[in-house]
Amino acid sequence: MSSFSPGFRGRARSLADRLPPGQYPTEQFPVLSAGPTPQVSTDTWAFTITTETGETHSWTWEEMMDLPQQDTVTDIHCVTRWSKFDTPWRGVPFDAFFEDVETSADFVVAHSYGGYTTNLPLEDLLDGKAWVAHTYDGYPLSPEHGGPARLLVPHLYFWKSAKWVRGLRLTHEDEPGFWETVGYHNYGDPWREQRNWGD
Amino acid sequence: MAMPLAWRRARLDERRPQTATARTLLFTVPGWPGHLPGQHVDVRLTADDGYQAVRSYSLAAPADADRIELGVQAVADGEVSPYLADDLPTGAEVEIRGPLGNWFVWRREQTEPTLLIAGGSGVVPLAAMIRAHREARSTSPFHLLYSVRTPADIWYGEELTDHREPHLDVQVLYTRQAPPGSPRVPGRLTATDLEKPAARLEPTSPVYVCGPTGFVETAGNLLVDLGRDPATIRTERFG
Ligand SMILES: Cc1cc2nc3c(=O)[nH]c(=O)nc-3n(C[C@H](O)[C@H](O)[C@H](O)COP(=O)(O)OP(=O)(O)OC[C@H]3O[C@@H](n4cnc5c(N)ncnc54)[C@H](O)[C@@H]3O)c2cc1C
Image (cartoon, rainbow over all chains, first blue to last red; front, side, top):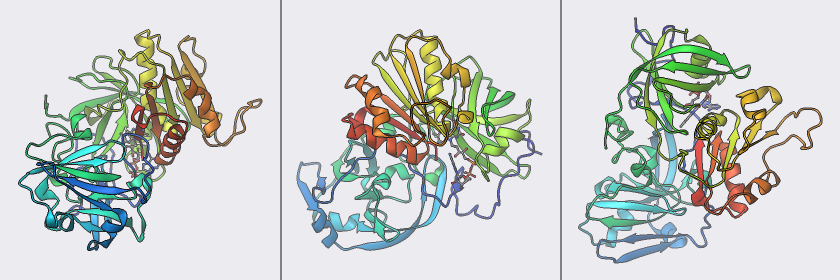
């Protein structure tokens, strides 16, 4: 018998192999953001990659929509402990944006409308692992979920999938972003339960 | 700075009702490192077969040695909250780790007028801020806008609605049913509710908004429409 929480039974255990440690499944789509939701119009939206040498590559909304599109169905894991299975997205894989970008940088800082930032190793965005997503379950992505477009990096905790994304800055050094400087883990692998500093 | 976050034993000392479905829980956590008002903890429950479930709960009071206070709203069909609210025996233990969250916090050095906006159980971390503000004898104006369904849904009753603090203003907004004689027609938070409180703020004043996602979205959007700088609005969403 456990010495903690006597009489606690919990729910069905069947999802164990699909749930990272410490997560629970939800059918809803809860929201985590640090502040109010920016309202960004696709008329003025642009996505810019700035390399370590200062070179910029920009796409308007229409130009982004002309890039190769991909549909992906994936599980997502939020650091606030919910996981949602089989979420259907449509977006542009980062490989398409990086086609003509010359870089030897190892890291990126993603910037969002509203001022938020998050940092990732560049390799975590490439080889079909990450997208700029603009459609969720067949509908344009709603503002509270990061619309018009957000990062989708499903193999990391979902705060790394920056909402309202407007660009990436490539860097040689790893630069902690917004949540990372207020206590969240620098990398955020849900399967290694990297939630907070020191995890 | 990277301190490993340990799971600590937490013994339930006392449970007090707040509403028909919400409880205050007082725990002793040996070795508790202290916390800032607005922070939260993870609570871990373990079943007999080793299965574990973890949820986050906000700290309802400022640091007090190894004692912490949580406020739990039992969610229908919830895995964890009904157990904490009603089944965990007093004297029994759970595991807790924290404090967590270094963004949704109020520090006693802050001197600007501050607006707190709570929806339902979102009042918990804001209560910690109000209590810390009182303990610190802070003279910075604090204003709580507290949205609840009915008078029976108010947490921390008289401590919030019948206090004598000169620098604290509390205004309850009823969404379904208001006490007799209330001038405001029951309903959800509107721009009108926010105009006066917002007008009392300075441009850099922080606004803390906490509650269910829909409530936080509405409040955040209304504040931005009223011209508040989005960078001054800090939000915490419970689900
Ligand atoms: C940073 C943070 C701080 C929090 N602080 C508090 C707190 O101080 N007090 C508190 O009571 N809760 C708080 N919560 C919410 C808490 O962590 C749990 O989500 C909540 O208790 C429900 O857990 P459960 O296991 O009972 O329900 P689950 O088994 O997870 O869910 C059961 C059903 O209820 C729905 N549901 C889940 N959460 C909520 C919710 N918050 N409101 C309504 N429906 C919900 C689910 O979608 C599902 O349909 C906080 C959450 C976060 C992220």
